[in-house]
Image (cartoon, rainbow, N blue to C red; front, side, top):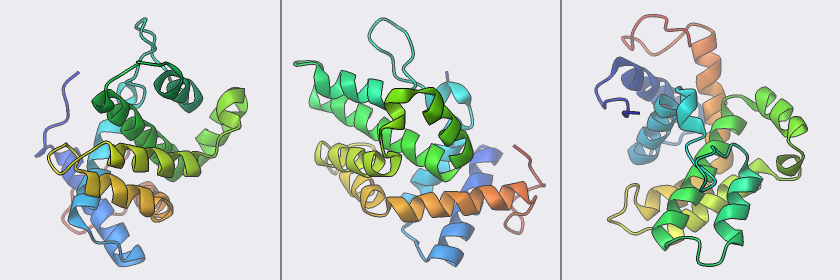
Length: 182
């Protein structure tokens, strides 16, 4: 599956929503972090992107506990780069669900006993921190962005909730486009 192009109207719309919500309501204004969050929303709007990791047999893994078990449980499982990508995905996954659809997350966690034992906030922060430690300035995204996501996880959750509230109310930044409903 192809990634959504940088100039796609949906990406621009999410970028404007994220920028307005985070800068005006929270005071978080690091453009690299805001761009990362807009990209996360754009990519995860496609449900196939949310569960991109597999268990090695081709079966998609959709719960954090299974991903953690795979990444941290198997000796010699992966290179540091593979571990970085898995932990980055765990951070993205937990941030998306806790920020955008917390009510769905509660149902998902009741259904899946293993994830019901995890704190998605703590795990998201920890996974972004691990991914940051395994990253450098030349990786995409660089370590500094992943570290900021770890350190400001709760603010990002709150800000993503504001983004959702804005789009549900059919509001948005001036000139960001028509009342797009997702």
